[in-house]
Image 1 (cartoon, rainbow, N blue to C red):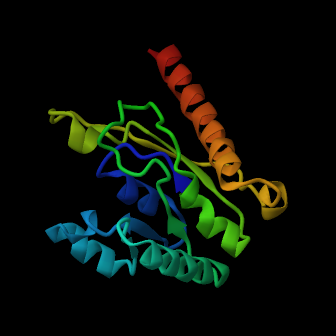
Image 2: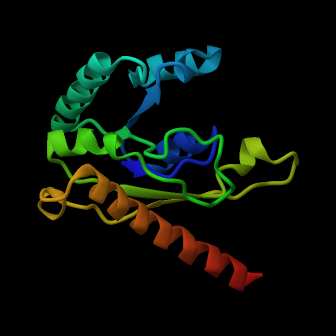
Image 3: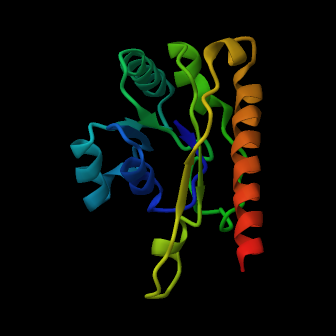
Length: 173
């Protein structure tokens, strides 16, 4: 599953919304924070060391094998969420799609909306976030594309859904 990334609530929102167990790939540096470290261990997530290319390749190959065997991973191809502005998408990193190309499984785009609010807005008001699992992109559809083209394809599908939902939300007001 490849999702846009807005904040600290993203992973929990996706995991709670998905009908089957899933886990996450996370930057090794960020995964050492106290609660995060325990969470990654609890869900048997993978840590990606962005400073060591050899380690990155090993992790990508491990993830690809686990995905072939049916394990579901959440990947945020935008990288971090620090520079995100609310519901706007950032560039997707093409390298994050290596797991999919190496495993040959469908890519499931996930659009999240307003998930920056639970930890990013200083308010006690109830927040409604949205998680949308989009139609899978099967290997036959992306097999001939390079990872940059796959990144653009996935980003465009997520962007279309986010834009549509925001228009609907605006109309309801």
